[in-house]
Structure formats: C-alpha cells, structure tokens
Length: 451
Image: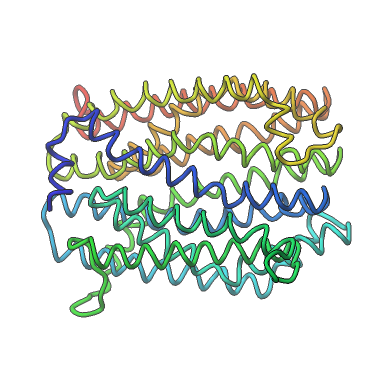
C-alpha cells in the first residue's frame, strides 16, 4: 500500500514529478510506434507514406476505444482505492478487462470486413490503396495487444505505479523500432516485407508490451487484480466506467475524425498535402506527449484525492501542472519554429512537402500553449468523474471549430493559409475548458461556493 499512500501524503510537486515523468517517457516512446513506421515507410516512397497517413485515423480510433475504456476504469479504481473499497476494486478491474476484450473483438471484425470500403472512400490510386489495405488489415486483425496492454497499464497507474507502466510501454516501442527495418527491408535473413513488415513490427511490439504489463501487474500490484471468482457483473459499474470513459473515447476519436476530415479536404489539393499533414500530426503527438503525461498523471492524483476527501490537494495539483505544461509547450514551440525543415526531412520530405510544411509548422506551433492548458484541465476534470470537459474541449479545438475553418481558409485563401484555423480553434478550446473547469470545481465544492 506504500504506493497508494504517497498519493495522499507526498508533497504535490514531488508527486506530480514522480507520477508524470515515467508517463511522459513511456508516452514519448510509445508514440515512436507510428513515427518510426513513417520514417522507414517513407524510404519506400511517398505513396507508402501517404498510405500510412490514410490508415492512421483508424489506428487512432482503436487507441481511442482502448484508452477511453481504461481511463474510465482508472478513474473508478483510483476513487475506490482512495476510499479503501477492496471488493469494488476487483469488480471494477474485471469489468474493465471484459470491456477491453469486447472492444478488441469489434475491431478484429471490422478488420475482416471493412478495410477495403474505408480505403476506397479516400483514394482511387491503386498503389496507395494497396499499401493502405495491407497495413491496416494487419493492424486491425492483431489489435488484441493494444487493448490488453492499455488496460493493464492503467491498473498499474491507478495505484501510482507509473514506473512499471513505463517499462511495459518502452519494451513494446523498442521491439517495434528494432523490428521495423528488419521486416521492411529484409535484414538478418528475413524476407523484405515492405509496408506489411511495418505493420507486423507494430503489432509484435504491442503484444510484447501487453505481455509485460500483465506480468508486472500480476507480480507487483497487490491491490488491483482481475478474476472471475466472486465476480458480479453490474450494469451500474459499466455505466460509471463509461460516464468518464465514453467522453474520453469520443475525445480520443476526435483526432481520428479530424484527420479523416482534413485528409478529405487536402486530397483535393495534392497527395503531398495529405502526407505532410500525417507527418505533422505524428510529430505533434510525439512532442505533445509530455503534456499528455502530465494530464494522465492528473487522473489518479485527482481521483484519489477526491475519493479520500482531500480537496485541497486537487487545487495543489492544478497549481503545479498548469504552469509546468505551459513551459513545456513553449519549448516545443521553439523547436517547431526553429527546425521545421529538419523535422520534415526525417521523413524524406520532398521539395513540395517542404514548401507546404515549413510555413505550416511555424503557423501551427504558436497555438501549442493553448492546447497544453486545455489538455491539463480536461484530464483533471476526468479525475473528478467528469469526462465531458475533456471531450468538448478537444472537440472544439480539433473538429467543431478547426475543420470548418480549414475548409473555408483553404478554399478562399489557398492551402497555405488553411493552418491559421488552428489559431481560432485552440483559443476557443482553452476558453471553454477554463470556464467548464471552474464550474466543475465549484460544483464539487473544491473552489469557492457551490453553484
């Protein structure tokens, strides 16, 4: 129980560092799955890079369902552990695992039946379409590793064990990085599998991470256990999981929706624009991982503090996390502003892609501070059991405001001006998140008088 006790006793700056640093590292390394795939796939050619960019929204959707479900479970576990309800803890964990397996089954079925339909919606180019079908089919049919890995990592995080969670994530990413060139280009006696090799390397990495997460949870987490003995399925538990989890699923899925919609807009200009935006999104995801690590650490900290009746520590958490996220965002902005060509060149960017991408990265990067604050506020409110703030904040900044303005600016002013839509969407998203968070904190009697 020592790891649980630190949630209520450790000084908040130290606790935030203790919880978030392993998450930052693990998320940074995890995001290398798609970064590394894209780097090596770009060596095959721009058609292959475009295919992976088209497939990425579906991968994000799988991640959305797995992460959203596990966030709902994580929130309930943290509150249950904080309130010392041991029987509820086991029941919640077992219910979460069953829900994860159900999500896995759905995507495997879609992988068998719907990949061709999806690809045909976005391209009639035979080479790009073939690459995309090969890559996406493998990722979906063997997606079990994603769902199992994510759930067991959240079990570890719910008791404050972000280090072991990091170990499982890093092991999977390192496996993927090692296998990518071997399987794509046929090294060490392996046949050259091209884009299929990239997909196979990815799913093997996910399975390695899942296996290690299960082992670590079994050996080192005496609090959260999964088992059907004395298990009672309760609709109320599922409802509570998805009260936080469903908005989180929607929040995560918004990235998929945004990419799909923006790809549909950009493809009318050129496939290079689609390839660039896929590269940008992966770069942004990679560099945003420190903020996401902070935000994900907020869920168990806020959830535990609320369950234990320590409302003062919730405000302390926000006072540490918000300025920290702002500083990280400024550093990332400087990187994007100073080295846009170098970042794109990692992906073998053509001259055309550089012409589109260099000014675009500089325009978009000026919004990163706003995005960081929206992320921290959204995850913190999820820790209180309100996932709607995170969902709507993300919806405003990634879809509701962003996509229409990209369409308007690109049509009226050209694709080079489409990126100014980010300026509008990020400011609107942050304004909403701040207002909604203050409202929730007052409602829970954490800040000022109850509304």
